[in-house]
Image (cartoon, rainbow, N blue to C red; front, side):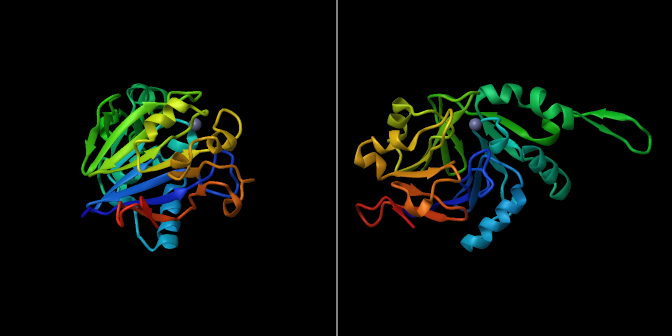
Amino acid sequence: MTTPFQMLTLGVGDAFSDRYYHTSFVLMAEGMHLLIDCPEPIRKILREASEASGRRVNLKDIDDVVLTHLHADHASAWETICHWKRHRQPARPRLYTSPEVLDVIWDQRLRAVMGETINLETGEVTPNSPSDYFEGHALSYGQETAIGPFHVSIRRTKHVIPTVGLIVRVGDMRWGYACDTIFDPEHIKWLSQADMIVHETNDGPHTPLEDLMGLPQEIRDKIWLVHYPDSLDPNDAPLNCLRQGQLLTLTKEPPGAVVAR
Ligand SMILES: [Zn+2]
């Protein structure tokens, strides 16, 4: 294909990691950047991934963010992104997320810190609305949403709050992201249409590595692990592990190859 579809891995850790940043990615195609989840400290995370990969990505390059769910290890930097864009560019980022998240993100998560602004000279309080900070777009179940060259599909995962997995298509290349979920064969069946499957593994309400090891070889060959526990040695894991700062190009060339490093 003529358009390189690249993925920069920003972090690979779980919510409690003291070794890695939380799991998030930047997808790149046709000069456009799509941020997949946004944990803090997002600007430091971007700088360090840029230095590790040699591919510079700054927050000012990113206008579009896909949010899978509202747990802090996936969503904590959304407030920072809105404030940074408003005061440093200025620009209004576009948020793409599930209808469930879009329904509550302002009233139940952002309003306390973004709902009004106090004028420090007059004491006057000015109310703000979501559109003062960002453009919100609901992704749709069963239908792709086009974000520039990226075509995004979502599917509900089995997680403790409303959460979606993703398939992002650029041309005929598909990048799949399980996101937070217990082991769910139906979810893996949906993800198996992708050329590359980024899958979580962890203890608790997550996917045990042993369950992924029980999948057919052709699926295991496409899986790259993230959200793995600090105790998992990525050099000694039975499946590919993504690394923080790793830049991959998704390609079908040469024939037979799916992902080139
Ligand atoms: Zn979660």
